Image 1 (cartoon, rainbow, N blue to C red):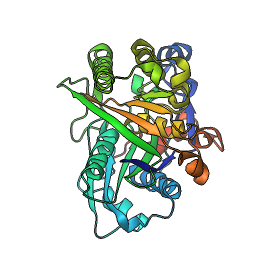
Image 2 (image 1 turned 60 degrees about the vertical axis):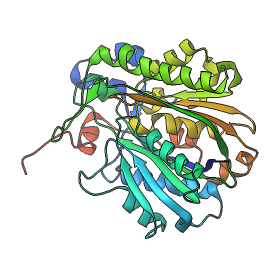
Image 3 (image 1 turned 60 degrees about the horizontal axis):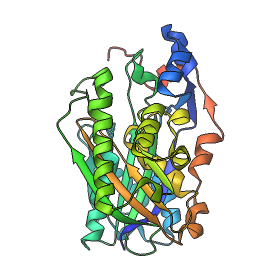
Image 4 (image 1 turned 120 degrees about the vertical axis):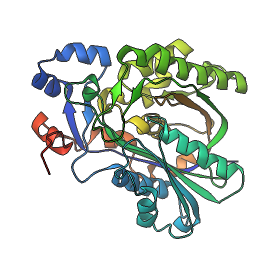
Length: 349
């Protein structure tokens, strides 16, 4: 029985409100809040990047995994579009930090916002093939948005980590399905600081076509229907898209509320649906079915169907819950501090 044996999340404490960003650029804050269904977003401080987020999320996953030896983890895969180095892996740093070196396979994944579920997909495949005892998949990003661009109101930071295995599973994987096309709705070339996007083209032809395509395919494959699930979570580039695709597919507001984090967290890119999954596992009951679908520009979606096991009640409070990371000890910053933290003020070397 392959699935998740430990999970964890980590989020920055710092936040910036939509009104603070809008004030600087003379934008209409109420319009952005309605259009994006966002109130605020997370802001990583200068000493936080994809690697540090990954380490902290992994430590929480290890707490929930019980007494497993990190050296039994055969692979670490990190999905992100904001790896700190162009030429230097993130995975080896995480492996060293948790004591999993040297007999381990590491790889950094990229597929825009789908990189995290890409890592989960591959980690699960190793477990199902019997190649290793445990595999660690991490979804982490400190995403970028150009000053005054619509992305700046949503681009956030966070990480979710999942230890996959066959023993003492918290959530069993029942079905997976991936759906891909060459749809260039969002991109960033080398040496560019910020991504570019196709504006409205990122909606119907990109996000909705792929999330619906993957979701309908996995429902057909499994013979299940939306009402069979206790919870559902989708990629969250903003607050609106997640809600719309869920309702159009036949899911209810009650099913998506626990994993619908974008309104108070922003778009954590690779971390969006995985972090939403951690919030769902924090409250799920044994036997619950959980539907999950990611999206990454370029373009593709990975869909998963999970079944929560009896073990969830034993481990959910072994580490901090995602809701606590979202709600407690928050520090709100002004735009100047945000610009400094995110290195938006560029100087000559």
